[in-house]
Image 1 (tube, rainbow, N blue to C red):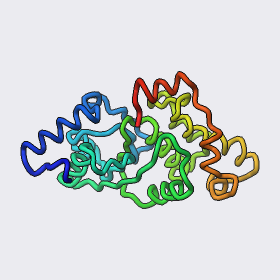
Image 2: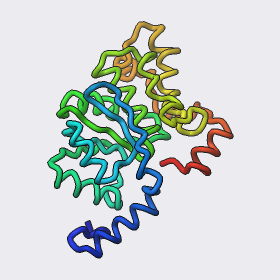
Image 3: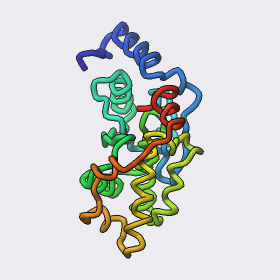
Length: 221
């Protein structure tokens, strides 16, 4: 990577320094926000390389990066660590303030059907993007109904429903209010004309206090 050269000691030091401060990695040295969704999938915040090594000892074979950030210090270190440790790194970019498009929902299902388990899935904080993907995993892979799978979007995992990130909850709430009563499965509803990501995003209203928390205080991605 042009901006983060790990081939020299100085380059690796600069990358770690950027990661530590700019990516707020100092907050995650001793706190991973780690929770097993099932015996084969654990959700966490952005892992340090030494944490990835620890997760490998727990049997993890695949690491799912939900952040993108392919030019970031965190990604340079994560990619390097996965290569050294023999872990498969899979990139699946999803956002925390948008209604996922159909292709993203289809892609999530295909992802969970194709990866090698046990797997670790992460975003930056382990709260929002990891949350919606855990809902989709619990529904598609574990067969849980959406109403039950939605527990993955919870304050327990530091998810804030009343901020802009609450649009993720809103997707499933709309299904439960409209799709389920009509006898549609979640997949059928997503594939129907009723599923309009642009309109749903426009209709969603975030709370002021929640927005202050996610956008100003916590500065969530």
